[in-house]
Image (tube, rainbow, N blue to C red; front, side, top):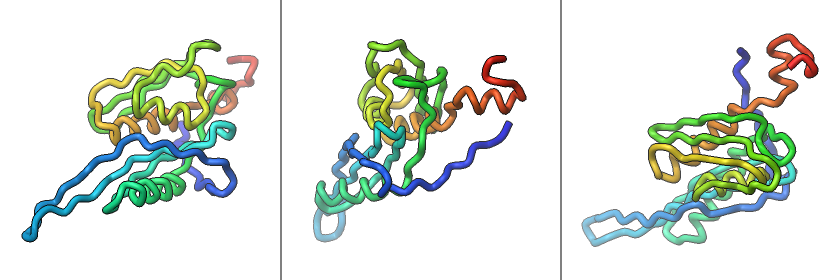
Length: 170
């Protein structure tokens, strides 16, 4: 089976909307006292184009950390194969001890997802999907597992060409 390659997408071509998933306050104890900084996990996406990306930023202030996370997310964009308002098939994504199950849902179901997975699904433009986050609740690992699942999605045309058949034969 052919291994898909990730093409670099230009962020300037899309109307990207950002969504902050998690903000973490980090304290480093040094000789003079405690140094506080913030880490932000951000998801950006264009629902009309089916494009989504995630990034992490660290800074002394929260707005600067969010800004850095958005810039990192714009460099990490990927296109997702969608079928109308849902995903084409069920898929399981893994990263570390985090596993995310995505299942297609009929029209009118909505996004049945929690926290980090919901942010990714709404940013990519999926309107009807059932999800289950299994294992860790760490938002970094959950987002990476969700992106792994989205990366594994195939559209009907790709599957037909891999099998050497036409769309009608599937």
